[in-house]
Length: 281
Image (cartoon, rainbow, N blue to C red; front, side, top):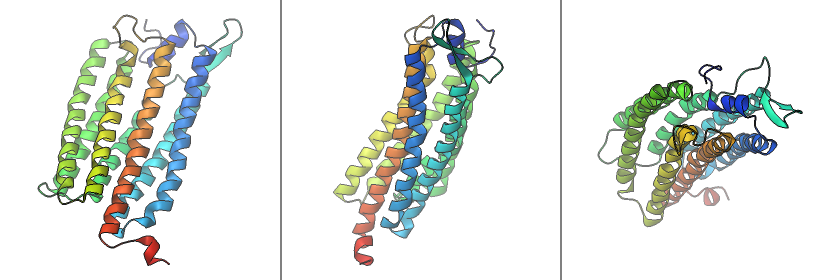
């Protein structure tokens, strides 16, 4: 089953079985929710930047850049979904549209290639490293973050045509993924030193949010073949599950993570004597 070449499995399911109205609309609405949340969060970060002391504001600025990038590329991903499939009256399902582009999850990888380094960098502008070098941690984040995305990007093209390549590239991506988690854990541990209890509590929540949301991505990558190489979720259920998983992961890892970093910056700002409300009465 390789008549579509290295296309993502969503296209093969549409070719083989078609996509029901419910599944199609659930994905369409999920993708719309994704870019709408990013736009709404952009306004949040713009409005709340002033409530942090100047030395913390670069974190909110980076969150704003992440929101713009995510909004634009997720909007393109949504349009890609809408343009790839047409409703077929005879079968009552959505099928591949003749002559148009195939659906491609690569747009998400392009988004992550922009966003992941900034998401990793921004915590460095809020917490203080007590043992590690700022430039060393930054470079490790950039190196492993970028290679994690690039190797995953290559691997996802083989999810139908070459499972060996799919899993090998996925495994290579996982090595860089685990290194990012290790470095982030190191940053969190060092960042806790000297913080007040309220600030430490927020930093603990940031680690939990980071850990949980980032582990959703490998699950979405593997979605077509979960529960078995032959069959599994290689159907419209897998399509819906993958897009929902990616969307939830994006919202939590970008928006919720960014909001928690903003809250941490505001707590630390007040403890350092910067209270916007008091200073601007």
